Length: 180
Image 1 (cartoon, helix red, strand yellow):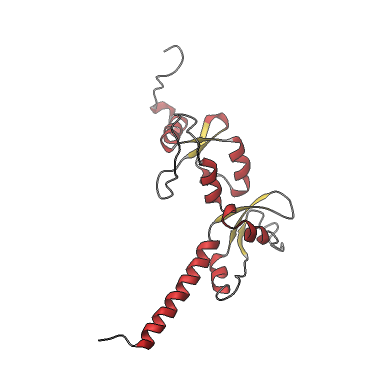
Image 2 (image 1 turned 90 degrees about the vertical axis):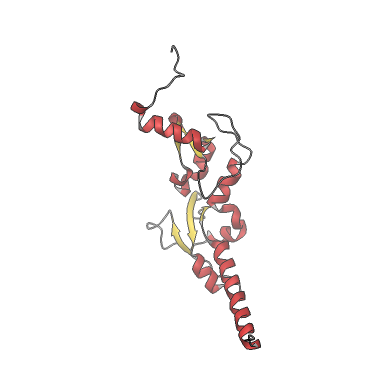
């Protein structure tokens, strides 16, 4: 049974609508690091991606925040930081900041290149003060840039071993200690 021209047109229009809505949502999803215009300090924000997608159908999306690390104390702000989100685009996404920081870096523990980050599985971590490694997802967005400035990259394997040594020293035998 042939598909009518009207049915084909409706399916095509629905497909285009879904494509545009999905594209706008994808563009504005995720946690970002911006400089708060009020405090001139880093802040972590999340844009309401669903609102941006729906409000932007056929026009420029209306942006608004759904989360900010300065809330609830400053929840009534004018959200002037959204101009930075528009200007910086994907450059202020935490995911992209992390990927750029790890690019061309080697593990501080084993010396192997970090390489491309596997976002779906095991990913590298950060070696911070006292030689403790933490996953970058544990670092609050408003502290991310400062933490990256002081941290060293560490691969997933070395991070796992480092975490084991710090969390369960009774299970570890260190064969590289001086004098042994």
